[in-house]
Image (tube, rainbow, N blue to C red; front, side):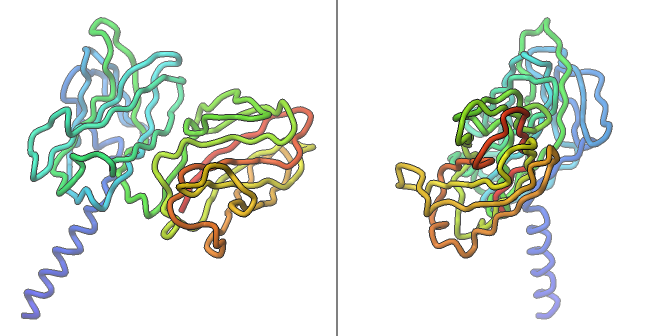
Length: 296
């Protein structure tokens, strides 16, 4: 009995350990239409050599789809070039790759590694035990080879923390974006009360994620106080009660900020949108930068 119990505990532990997949740069192998592979500084690089580049994982460990619902990956592609990234998966229930068991992400290259965050939980095929997966990172005309790179690649439980990549900050009011390369949002002030808005990768479960963390750089002359607004599902506009203020030096350097929302009664239910007011009063010149934004 004791032996059987220990065996069961070991099996359960193994399942939990396999519950999150993270593929290192050395974990990719070319299956089709790519040449010159290399893995340097945790980044896999290669050059497409056909119309449908395919990479497979050399040491795949199956894991439960239900415990992992967020794909986070970074990819570098030449500036201005467009391609379509696609991930396929197989499961015990559906052992063959198919279009139905895949997700797509449009890529417009910036020449730098850009992070993408894709919600998998709403996909009807993302169920059961995932037994294998592959990525098709480049899909371009056959006679147009392009260098590409894959950096971070992991599939995680959104309840453990959800990043909001630079490219997900899509709207700007009284400021303008001047870049999002290297996973940094960069912008300039053009009016009073500047703020930016995020397209969230997935709804935020406020019952499990109770803090927000980011790094912000404000130019000298900005007010050292900012404000974060959130919008619960069903609410039509941002409101003062659904917000939190933060302090940060305005000295042209990055500073880490953590906002604890665990005691905020209005932080509840599903959060569907975020608005980030980086400063109450912008400097007359200089740029702001935002990076490493995560809800945790």
